[in-house]
Amino acid sequence: MMTIFDPSVQHRIMVCVTPQKSCERLIQRGAARARELGGEFCVVYVNKSQDLGRDLKEHKILLELFEMAKGLGGTVSILSGNKVYHTLAEYAKNNRITHIIVGKSLRSAFDVQKNGEIINPLIKAVENNGILVEVVE
Image: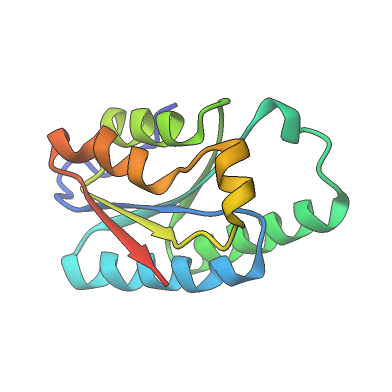
């Protein structure tokens, strides 16, 4: 999937969100970073195929996050893929993203082991493209 960025913009910030209210801070960080650098930002959510049946509360949170992003001047994209880090890395490469903002995972060690880690594989997948990954506590 391609997002339409102004071709003259040098800095493109991608903010990765999940359906959690705490992601508001990531969107605010992405908007601030875009202002600092004179760039643009987009908010991205990866919908894994088994996530299609998410409950209404999570959909409501995502909609609120997307509205917040638009209100701050960003764009939003919903991606689809089973390997979240791979889907994010491909999107970043295809859209010439320069910065990625992600939140530190609050998942349990068991959940990480069962479902896989996202941040470190994402960093490895984009490091050769010169994309800076910022992990927000």
